[in-house]
Image: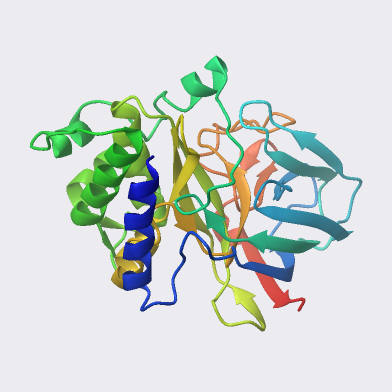
Amino acid sequence: MSQGYRVVVAALLLIATGGAGVSVADEAKSRAFHLNYGATLKRLPKHGKIRVWLPVPQTNEYQHVERFGTTVPAETRLTTEPKYGNKILYFEQDGSDSGAIDFQAAYRITRHEVRGVSGTDRPRISLTEAERSRFLAPNVRVPVDGKPVELLSEIAFGGDTFAVGRVLYDRVDQHVRYDKSKPGYGNGDVLWVCDSRFGNCTDFHSLFISLARSKGIPARFEIGFPLPRERGEGSISGYHCWASFFTNDQGWVPVDISEADKHPEMKDYYFGNLTENRVTFTTGRDIDLVPQQAGAPLNYFVYPYVEVAGKPLPQDQIRLAFSYDDAE
């Protein structure tokens, strides 16, 4: 991407955020906080193997993670699934006399703002052939041809990969509205969202990934938790996800289209940048756990996955308890 284009993007960001946005010269923001990841499993049988897999956030370019406390009723194993490199905390036990199991993992996290557009000192990276193939391939709910590609039929593409990514970003935001008032959202089913034209973050970014891959652009799915902008403490009600696409010049460029749809004044910012108010837990879709689960591959992995006697535990028997408090 040319330096001139960088300046234009930076100007757009300043306009979109009322002069308080990012520019090429700004320093990326950061946030340090404690995160408690807990749950209670309910109505468990007294007999039968109970297996529990928990996603574990990892240190990467944009976050530093320290695990400083784990409370579980059995010995744990830390494993890594080979497809995406996600970390997993696993334990198992035979039945529950009380009918319930409580567990919790505590982390101290420092998260940095992602500056994919305006950052000029990001290290140049490349993809291996295996990585490129993985992030171009379809997922069970993310096709790379057919109905989603029809959304691009009247668009004349030009420019480099970064410019194509912006066209796709705008097309998804035009087609989908953020709306959780009706059932069906949240599965990241691209064919469904093409027809429904509403959904949550999973639906927005699944469609973007589908369109990017259809244009030969590697794209990946990332999921974790959001934090409110205001510092303090409180509960976390649910997950948040976003996507990234790959260019040879910029590396992985993040997009958060559902946040852009909810906050139009930040639309230019959320193409190429992510606030520090989040934490990444895992990457990818159609995930096989380690040790291998008896059930089907997971659509995505951010909540505890539990099997009892080889069957997935229904979600209504898992009471989630996620919270945060800012460390400074």
